[in-house]
Structure formats: C-alpha cells, structure tokens
Image (cartoon, rainbow, N blue to C red; front, top):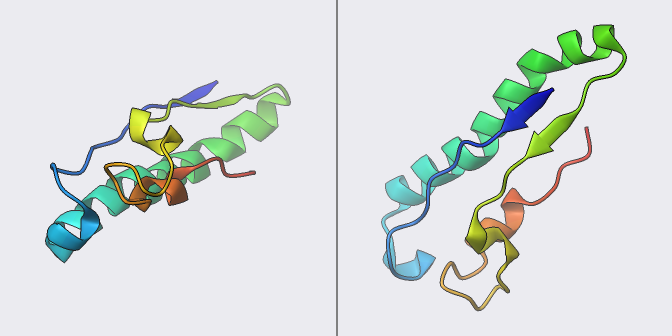
Length: 81
C-alpha cells in the first residue's frame, strides 16, 4: 500500500497575490511529488497484484474555486492510475 500524504499549503492570500516561485514550489510538491512517488511504487504494487494507493488531500482541495486558494488546489484532485 502506498499512502501519499505529502503536501504544502499556499501562504495566506489569493494565487494572484503570491509570487510565481512560491506557487511553483507548492505545485511541484503537491502534484509532481505525488506523481514521482506513485510512479516509483507502481511496479511493486503491480507485482503484488493487490496494491492500493491512498491519497490524503489537504483541506483546501475540497473548497470551491472562489475559496481561499482561488482554485489553485483544484488541480491536485484525484488522478486515475
């Protein structure tokens, strides 16, 4: 079983107020970090023929696009592997 629990939050403010390098760091961790770990674990999970992937999401991923994150976390939603 793989449990993806890595994630960092945006600082206070809307994405339009946050520097792009900060947004990129959050996105790299929350999206590409999840993808990299999952890709590394998939061969083992497939060999076991009983693998499971659990993704623990941050609170902001469940808020509407007009919430505090301005929709930035919407792209961190479920991915079908």
